[in-house]
Length: 226
Ligand code: ADP
Ligand code: MG
Image (cartoon, rainbow, N blue to C red; front, side):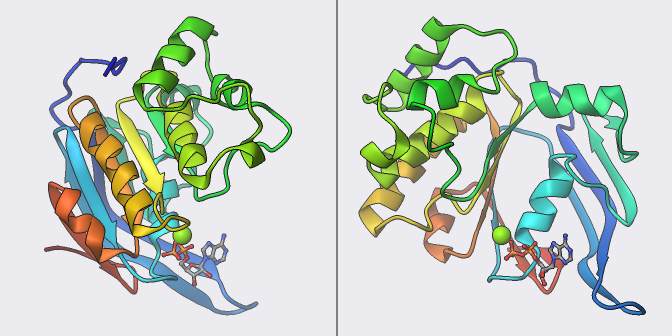
């Protein structure tokens, strides 16, 4: 497999400290979605965040990827505290260091697979994209998403997250639209990629634990290492 991931090692890739997140639930009330979450990811590997629907997984993903700020607490990347929103440094970080794999379906239906995967690439390089697609087993790069299998779409979605050589891959429910066989295929790909990336997978499927180096349980917004 050709791996394009960046090889610089940070002592502390991602650090969340005492993160709380609440949203207004009515004019006068708020719901606490994330409750005092502290988390430190310092090496490559697969970190699984396991929790049922509504437990706060996608909220935690957005905060870990600097797409959203916590209500209180701090979020740092490679020792740089970037909790404050709207800084240029934070935008650069989102673009260059973090690869997002959103929940299915995430490919744009009116672009081919190749066009979808190239879309977020900062320095366009078709050769590199074709190599990435080949390395993770996507053959039909001229097809539109509806013309290929759901599993191949998920592979392409992972490829799209890799094009800017990020340090972290944040993967939201990668196996939820798939059969057990398809889910295992996708997890084999992520297992290969963990040599190059710090991968956070957010899922409600406990079967993914066997592919993971570290498993956390998220329950009502409380994170616990298991
Ligand atoms: P999961 O991904 O585990 O299903 P989410 O993080 O999507 O959980 O949601 C957790 C809780 O936070 C849910 O009750 C959801 O309604 C609420 N929530 C998430 N995002 C928002 C938002 N932008 N505004 C208000 N409530 C939200
Ligand atoms: Mg979710």
